[in-house]
Image 1 (cartoon, rainbow, N blue to C red):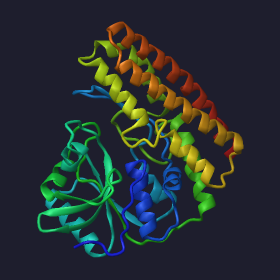
Image 2 (cartoon, rainbow, N blue to C red; image 1 turned 180 degrees about the horizontal axis):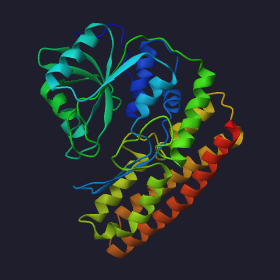
Image 3 (cartoon, helix red, strand yellow; image 1 turned 90 degrees about the vertical axis):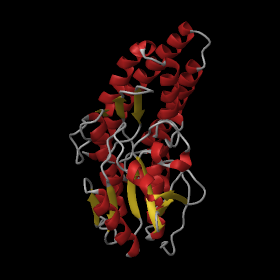
Length: 332
């Protein structure tokens, strides 16, 4: 069974690409950057991990995909916690009914990534299945990927980083329930509010990690201890990847938010778009500082590079706080 009329495309971030692939399938007319912005996609979550690389952060909120459907008032169902047999039976039934299923995974268990690093949640679409294989539309690959069903089961039940428990989302009626102008403003206000006051918005960020600007500030303070970690060069290299690679779209996801502002007619002024662009560029510069530090020849240069990056991030946190408050002030 393979969905008829589904057109796979790659993109910059797994979540926003999956949403834009859904938008194309359902004829919503939304590109990836617009899907990202409508999902209140800019955010921040900082993690302390038990295993290597011991520290990680995302420049997006964990509820990005959920927010997209709620903001656009698209009828959908989100399920989590079901027994695998029941979840897999339901996923197959949804595909049989003509709906791609958005699932949340750990790339460690997706064999086609060929990686020994846990990274979750990575979202993608189930677009077909047969016998003991599933067909996956993954933003990182030019063609849909085939995977043994048992490996998908493992990927959807990972306990690394953000614990997963057979979470998936399916559209039940592909109709947008609100107008685009309203959705653009609501999503942007939600993004700003959640960055300034995590948990004070519409969506619960959950108990794992430190969120919003508080997460950026925790990252800055924590970086002073990185040289005491088991492999500080890898921790620093992974931080660079969290800024500029691993599906961030560039600049710790700030590049996607910049492109959202450039794409849509938003009510927050050209200064907002320009400042978002400058912040994205400066996060990219932070990534370069982290990359260079991770390649340092000695411990002292590594320490100095980490300190330099921490100072740059501290300044960015202050700038972001001012930008988000200006968005809320404009909305009020």
